[in-house]
Length: 165
Image 1 (tube, rainbow, N blue to C red):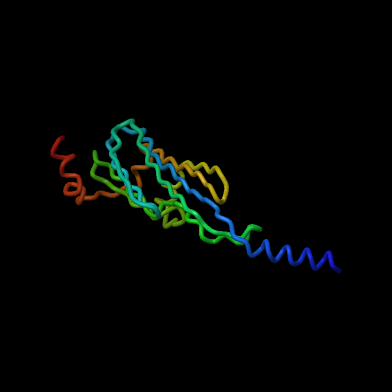
Image 2: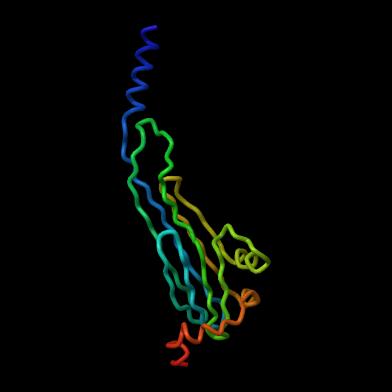
């Protein structure tokens, strides 16, 4: 009986102790342009937004990271305070043909255009729940242009680009 009481008291003491846990979330987003067209790529994530031009047969990439310190019980406990980075929205502009496509995150599949877009994203995951490293590469081929729609606002948005041409 004494052993059981001692183990119970020891368990309660350890369960009440806290420890600091460091978490990290990394996301590499890249675009590989396998076409003869100039593109502009915008990525909105839970952390921030970024954008860049991709010339024909060029590649671009973005790196998003978040580090956080959380407090958990010594025995582990339930960790619910971890921030993961993921895409909220992506915008792809075909500057050569003034067409665009907007995609609402990886979990929204609206129609055949979203499905085709998702099929051109190659993903890899590494790490663990506390320290994750994700990579997503959008490979743009001529096939992807079938989902794009004419966008007359691009002449205003990218006036500097079109004035140079």
